Image 1 (tube, helix red, strand yellow):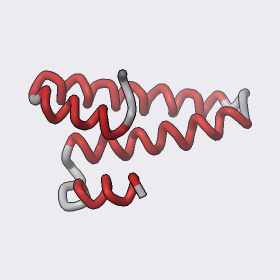
Image 2: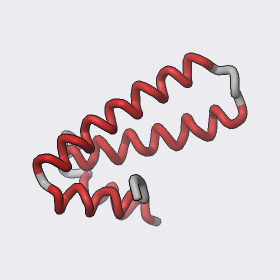
Image 3: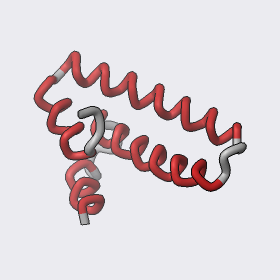
Image 4: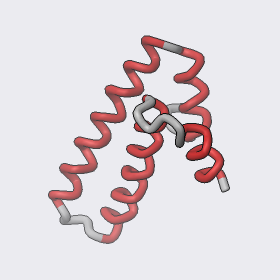
Length: 81
């Protein structure tokens, strides 16, 4: 339910920072659940770290450019309390 409503908001502009952060967050959640089962999958761990870094840089960019959109996004995604 939450996922569909959030995608519909940003589906028009897939290049927006919000949509990219949303898609990285979904990938992070999928990889995290995968790594709970496969603890020694080091290539997936590396991929997770790369995605985390990309999301961190995008969030830092958004927080510098527009604090309101940044706070709204992290509130919707439930990250960075």
